[in-house]
Each structure stands twice: as C-alpha cells, then as structure tokens.
Length: 221
Image (cartoon, rainbow, N blue to C red; front, side):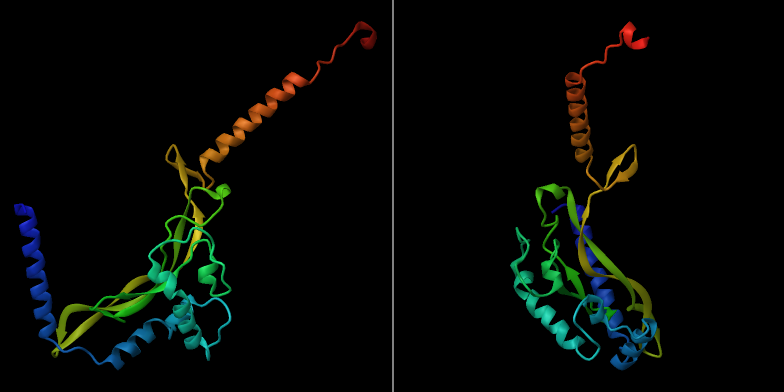
C-alpha cells in the first residue's frame, strides 16, 4: 500500500467519523413529517405507478406491484442476461428485448431510504442478427427526494430537496455512430457500407448486361 492509498484510507475514516458524529448530534424528524413533505414536493406521486404499464388500477396497484416483484425474482437473482426472449405470459418487463426487474436502491441519508429502480442484466439487446450494435438504455423519471444536510435547527436534522432520476424501464436502442464529430444516424455505418457495396454491384451488373443502343443514319432520317 503506497502513501496515496494510505491517505485515501485515512480520509474515508475521518469523513465517516464526522458524518456519524453529525448524525448523533441531531434528532431525526418524524417519519410522518418526512413522508408528508415527500408527497407534497412530488404531487402525491405513488412510486409504484412508475413501473406499471398494464392491467392495474389504484385499488389494485399494491397487489400488481407485488406480482411484478415476485415474477422478476428468478431473473433478478440469476445475474445473467437471457440469450433468447423469455417465453412467458408474465409482466411486460420480462417480455422485452431488454428484460428488467425492480431493484431496491438504498441510501441511509435519503428519504425515502429505499426506492425501487429498474435494473437489467443485459448490456446489449436480445435481438436477431439484423439488429446488431444495440444496447439497453434506461428510461428515467425525475422525482424529488430529501437528503439529510449538515444544518441543525433546534436539535433537529435538516433535510434538503434534491432531484433523483429513477430508472423505470429499459428499452432497446441502436448505438449512435459519429462521422466528423456529428451523430448522423443510429443505424450502424456497417449497414450503409453493405448497402453501398450492393448498389455498386448491381450498378456493375446493369452496365455489363445492358446492350448499347446503336443509332444508324436510316434511323435518324
């Protein structure tokens, strides 16, 4: 371990100590106050609704979300991307080219401490050879969360508003390729090269197989 590593290690220990000391010097606000504030800044958003796309109502959303979590458990625990599309009549999240599952994201100094986010084991899409150069892109929904700051008022820890981008699904998309620092298209350049090669080949065939038209004096007259 070199001096730089030792310095980084000590810095982490010192930072952790002061953060813990700060949290011990103030009292957390009541969960009810944090919940009401969180709902207020997000217009009473039900976080579970962000992940539901079909077959749910307000009265059934809790059960439907639980079904989504249960259906995704096996894939979530697998740690690998399927080689083929899942043959299932279950959630849409498992039937896509970028199958995803609800994953719990936890930050101790945030309210809510735990937030469900969409996660996938696939880097590229489950596709055929005709759809190469693809990747799984997260769709994100921005919400506001509460982050515990360093301020203390009357012994109460103060929370500040902050934006948080929640991945709510994954979609299959093509990789943009650049030419002269400009993104021309999301279709791979190899596709255009092949197309151009075919056009030249067909053009060559037409040139060699088409008989030239001869013009005689009789035809002109």
